[in-house]
Length: 315
Image 1 (cartoon, one colour):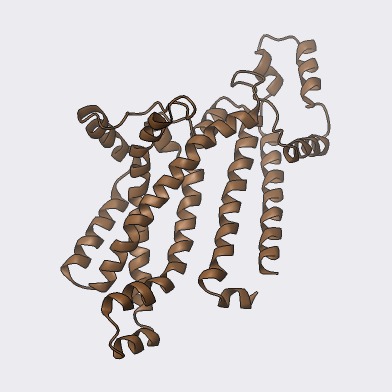
Image 2 (tube, one colour; image 1 turned 180 degrees about the horizontal axis):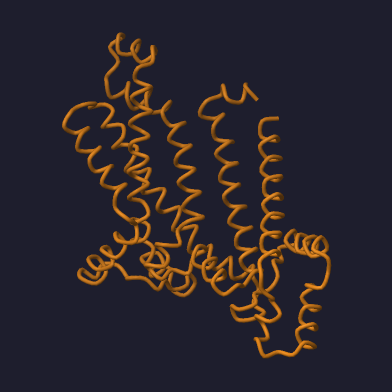
């Protein structure tokens, strides 16, 4: 029942987002037919293109036709990106960049944040705790675009360890594609590591005040076992929640880093489509991005009862 309710909520939200996105784009000023043919096109040609695109039909008919196509994996064709090119292919190519980039950034964040936050909690008020909190605060203060420029100048231009951008296709050069994602993943991971470190520390401090922790210590259990086995396992619920939110933000908001490193990801694709007023592409990319966000949120909801069975009992 718990998972069924969560799945139903996800599907309803996705449907609602599709309706709102379609309405918002429908109400925006501008004529797609004129965008395709140019401002010098005659009225007859414009009317013919509108008829071919189905723009002369009622909005409900247009939405239902679009939704029917989406259910079949057809998001229509782009107006501007190699005119007539499938939106599904454009979005898929962008996701080949955004998904590994976001996944790499969140994995790096967790790999550093969990041990750092745990160590800070175990040394509360000590020198190590203060050093970790200082660097966490610094990580939150550095703008991503500035850090990205510095990373390119030092690691790509000066040292030559990584490519500065312009990611090749995975099929053509998988090692080069992976190497081109290292620097942007690190840039994206730094502020997330700072946030997650503070979250892990706070959750650990609250957990270490629980009665069962005092009991374990009273029985003479080693401090490392108390912290990493009993404390950390219960602090992971709050950490997983924030990590999921960070991952959602990465999928939906990597446009700045993608611009700095010239990566053809989803954020950059949506920005380009908005600037070019390619409304079908905006609509398809936003829908896919929303579907990914809701799927991640659903998987997190499924993870909570595993981490804490009491949550399932409430539902």
